[in-house]
Length: 190
Image (cartoon, rainbow, N blue to C red; front, top):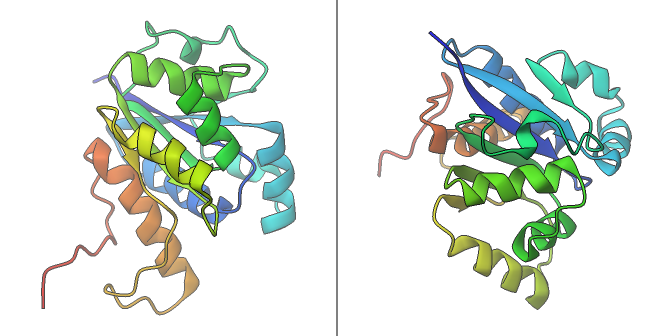
C-alpha cells in the first residue's frame, strides 16, 4: 500500500518542538510519509530555540525539500498529498498564503494545497495578534479545508510537563488527516 504524504512546512516563528513531535508521530504511522520544507528563517529559529541542527529534525522526514526548490514535486497539484501542516506558521507566512504570494516552495506548496482542496493546518504562532494578523487568519479560516490551530497551551488533559503540551498540539495539528496520535487525550466532558 502506498503511503499518503503529508507536507510539513516550517517558517521562522517559535514552536519547533511541535514540529519535531509532528515528525515523530508521522514516522510511527504505517499509512503516512512526511515531506519537510523549512524556510531559511525556520532553520535559524530552530537552532536558536532548540540548540539542535536542522538535520536532527530532517532525519524523521521521509523526504526533505529546500525552500528554493520551486520546481520540486510539492509545487504541483499532480504531486499527490493528503495535505499540509505548517508549524510553526509565522504571521508573514500566513500573510503570504492569504495573498497568494508564492515566492518559495513553502508558500507555493500551501497555495497548491488550497487550490487542490486538500487539508491545510496552520499552527500559527504570534502574540498578541494585531488586527492585520486577525484579518489574514479570518480570511484563511473561510477557505474550505483550512484549519487555523494556534499553538496554545491546554490543561484539560492534565499535562505534567511541557512535552505533554507539545505532543497535544502536534496531535491536534495531525487530527484533520485522520491520525489518532497514541498519547492524545481528547476532551470527554466533565
